[in-house]
Image (cartoon, rainbow, N blue to C red; front, side):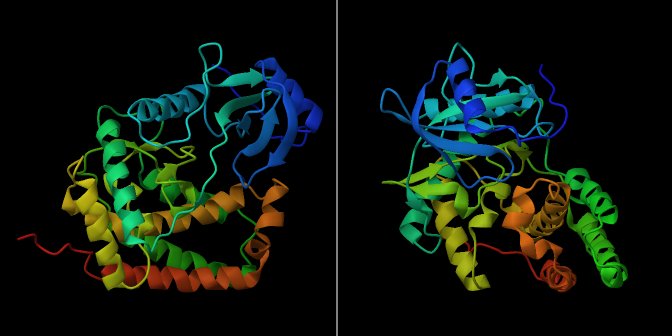
Length: 329
């Protein structure tokens, strides 16, 4: 297994990109257009055969080779079941390729327009395919990838934030007092009596394209966890809006996979975990030049003032009754 040491995307110049692609037998004729990706580096190009591809260079030290291989094999397993996912291309019996101190994968370029979260026909399609994804996902669990839990999403992020210089001194007391209150409440509401299955892991609307149906992209955050993790980020608006969306998704989902309605109690805890994890992710990546450029507000005191308020709002949301589907007659 190749372990990556030292983060550095700075050497990903056109010459290195071309050499890396040439090492797997692909000659880029035009393009090398950077796509919107912060965790990894992703480029679209046209090869000499006229085909359009996307190549992903993986961030060093984020995942091991074994963890990336698990993601790739899960995606290929989904594609074999004719589930619309952006699956890596196998070259020389492998999908992950080393080049110098980098690792890359090749994908077909599969464009599409934005998925419309308020379109109930599209939500029904997405729900049906998520049921199929989870039907495959529950066959086994990842052996190398993590399982969603408090250590990764709360305790480690809190330590990162405590060691970060990003939080203004005059806000630290209020920030950590409210963060710790939120953590205690999340500890009380988090439970693990759910079936752990392989998930997309980051199934927000931006990771679903629409091209005569949904196309699920970017399984980089695939991990084990409860099924609701792949559903709750598709809900938006007021409570009655979310109930209607949830009902549409789950009615279609249930055509292919059973859903344990007790997992609805995890929606607000998962939202709280994501909130804390996201802040720590930005703090961890701040030395990457792409991050200050893309997220300049993260260094603004107003952002951190807003997070203190967001903690209070999330605490209030955790006190509300969980979403509950209407009984079926």
